[in-house]
Amino acid sequence: MRTAAAIALLSLLFSTAVAQNDTETPRQSFQAFVDAILREDLTQQERGEAFERYFDFEAWLSEREVADGRKYDETERESMKKDWFELFHSDEFRDSWRRRNVRVLEEPQAQGDKAELVISMTGAGGAEEKFRVLMTKANDGTHWRWYSIPQVAETLPEPTLAERIAAIEQALKRIAKQRAQLEADEQALGRELEKLRAEQAEQHVGDSPYATPQSVVKAAWTAIEKGDLNALLDCHTTRRVAGADTEALKARLAKTRERLMAWQVLDTTIDETDTARAVVRVQLKLQRTGEVDQRTISVRVLKAGENWKIDEAP
Image (cartoon, rainbow, N blue to C red; front, side, top):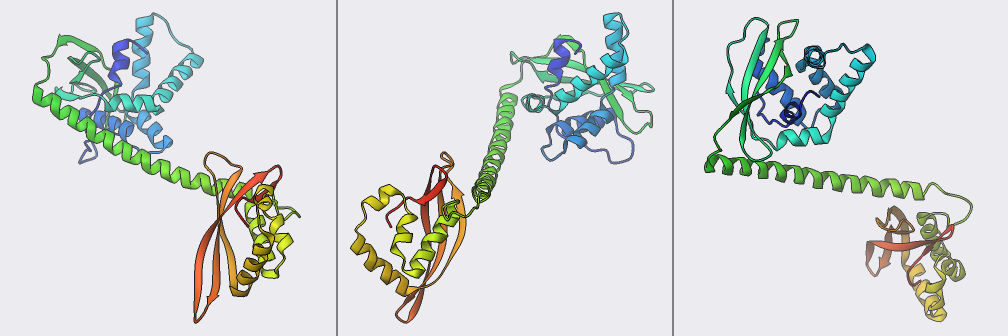
């Protein structure tokens, strides 16, 4: 990049303006470029198309070659353009534009295929600085492309108290909007991660009834259906079985078996911090006197070695 000031320019912030006809003004073209930076809904391809449309790389390179006193070969040109693309697509680039309070001060009449804007922005030290946006008209004449933004030596007056308050208020609104979007994205990603981890855990299905979280829970309820206490205990961790009262278990098993009408495993949730732990939901239909008791229970399971076992009292 040409100078530190030119890079700093890439931190400008504009509100979007759209041309009302087929020919954009210099200001509309530049603001359309900025809009492509700030919008969150554009694809990488759309951002790249905006870069090609509104940035005149060839004009920028010509100035660079004059300043450096040399011609760049094709490999060097491609590398420079790639650097621009990577900068334009980066989150740091987008965030820097959001942090600036930019105003268009002047839009002089275009001279043939040349035009410029005069803008101001808040510098790193808080002072207002002035820049010129140098632009060329596109070959088809429908829009303008910027290629250089030199700083004007003049330092502008400090913003008023009201302007500073307004700028902070706008920044806080943007932060709140971004925070809400990040929270929504976090929740959506969390749900997707749970789903994928559950699918991954169920992929290792084999002959063993303890191969997955759902298979061991299915094995346990199959044992309850059959009244097979030993098979039911085999579905539980050793620690849980060790403290069980066998006679009391037999009585409970018989009672549950008598009331059980139907059961269905619904889904699995893998623990966020420990993928060896999971919760399997089971929908039950039990017979009560005169009515049906339908409920959904959550069964905690634990992976020990290659086997999943129920980690709660049988």
